[in-house]
Image (tube, rainbow, N blue to C red; front, side, top):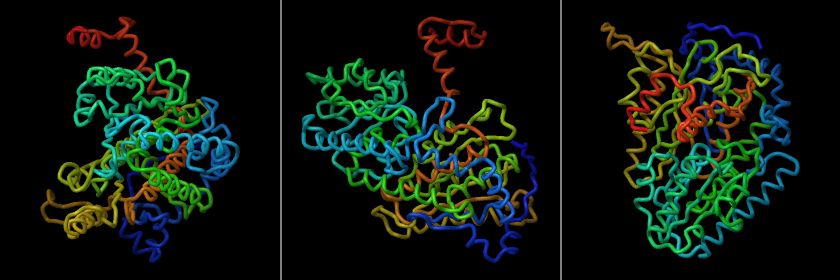
Length: 494
């Protein structure tokens, strides 16, 4: 792949608007109840044409077709990437296999609701990374006090996190949902052990009878003591950060109801259809990837920021941190060669308007150029006066406008340079269908970025070494450690 050059010089966004009366029409679109607007980025017709040509050179259409056909696209692990099949997209036998697993999941949801596990009022979801972030996002965004169950989530091995998670739950009426692709994840097994002890300590006669396991390795779950009738499986081709569509979403299906799960999958499938059929210049995930590549490669931007102007989407940013940085935080190509251009930037952000008072000084006047993405929802779902939601939206729109326009001032400390890019993603309403479409949009954007970088977005070997060393240290195997780490271990009394 040819090396991309960097340039800090950007044409004025105002000049781009002045030079193209149709700019807003070209760079905004509506897909499945979501409005996307890239007009305040530095994408122009020439850039889109160049990226489109480059995408063709990367074999985009063939790679996309392979993923939706269940062919091997995760070349380093010799696997397909089958998350799209979990929502009914794609072709071939994988669609039927995913549907059968979904029916078994539905049957277990029905069993819990019918009282097969006794009186259940709460769910303790145990997992980490992709085994937790997706379901937690769904429940927080769409639940918030609704539904028949109190759902709590714990991933961290920190005991304080476990204590906090169980605090509002009654052990006598709590269902434990343990999620691990391999069922060997240290944090998940430690928290499961603590959960079983918690149930025993409260007098629950058969703690294992209150446990459901979600895994791609059912034999390992059986070996851990879980009855096979309470194990839901998903395929090896479903990566953790792409897994909320599978049985990993069991806790969300319980907390939100099966209709919500169906609608979530349908919204994602609608975005799949858009991604499969739209031309590059009219494809939301593809245009988003073009803007990403422009700022990373041509402007040297090492970070990008996302701000959710809706508190129900507070967990969207950490969810996307894993999706984007674990998928595309690579330094070698799919062929194992060093990359010739930057890959994924650091994803960070927060929730507006809180974030305005903490981070936006740097965005408006700092020396670091940061592409910003605003995600907002047109209709509110709270019980407060409508004017409050209007003010929330106006704050989001005002930030995008002023990042672009800036403000001249005789006092340099008060001047703002402007010409700073932003994208706006505006949902009509936040419901399961629109959230499903939004998350599928980000998945396909990540996939398109990976192709443009020439990397494999479906492996994550970089997370393994630190965990391996931690296991060795826990076993007393210090190995060839540096003096600093040895001193820290000694100081902590370990």
